[in-house]
Length: 207
Ligand code: ADP
Ligand code: NI
Image (cartoon, rainbow, N blue to C red; front, side):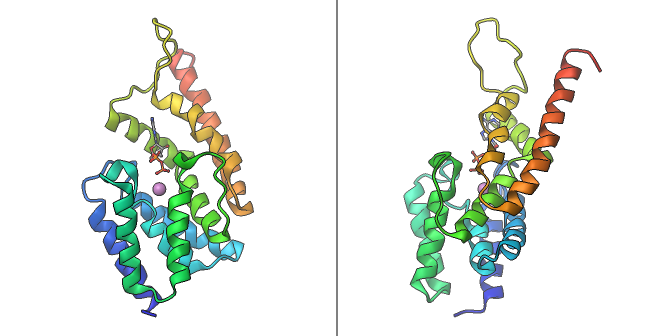
């Protein structure tokens, strides 16, 4: 097998090229943070560190929003892996993790391998806490959503950055797989709840 460090460097390079020009909610640095957390969680949880880190570097390359065809993009990642990994089982495992880990594939989509659970947790951790908040507002800006609409006059529920906390961010804590990620998610949850309290206080002119 090609040297593991070399493969990781190639994956990093691939991510760097791929994310040129994407919005800040979905960029090279998101992938960089996910890879760093994947390594940390893998070490603590006893998962295969190399598989977790490599999968993390590749996990968003087939994202629906960034590709014409998700299927083609997955095939492309698989072809790329064939160049570097000899063990078909490793390739299969990485592809399976990437395909199943997305939140969009269902809140309850359970992921079987420990490596998959680690990478999914690392990705979800980046959607919560201070960084998760920053990403939500950046994403909202990129798609033209407003910050907050307290009660729209036409009573229609509007998608806003604040609404996204309830749709997704505050729910992620309960979806963490590993003990290590659950501990971190609990801290980040407290921060998000206190952020929302401050936000509403300022909005209502109380602070
Ligand atoms: P992921 O890459 O974790 O699968 P998405 O692609 O759905 O997540 O979203 C990327 C980032 O943008 C995440 O931080 C997510 O919380 C945020 N986001 C997604 N949809 C919205 C939305 N409608 N409004 C605000 N933020 C959003
Ligand atoms: Ni991601």
